[in-house]
Length: 112
Image (cartoon, rainbow, N blue to C red; front, side, top):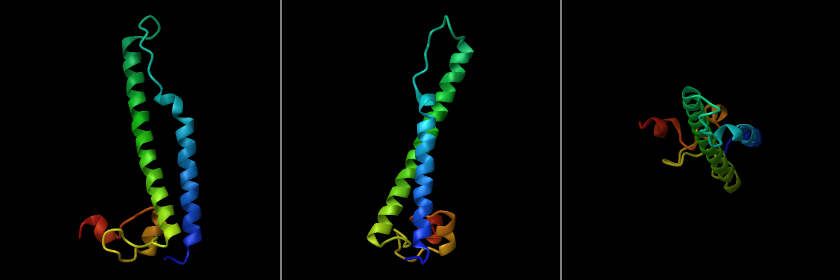
């Protein structure tokens, strides 16, 4: 387990809080688009639908990142943090510093 585990844990918790906040702020942009033709033109509706889909895709990515963070926090709690899920080798400290939620060493992540 890395020496700076508490720093990495704090970074994970902060990133999780940031993502959750972004998710709450963007909730309205994922709402259903009103299709009232008397109020909004066709191109405006198409633009609104496109923006809604982009907001949904961003939310999906945020959800995946939160899941990765939760998994990393669970590994910290269990004492398995810092070890590759595929090969079991220790993940480089520099790699964890860049992304503390990473579950794989560089060799397994790149398929070497």
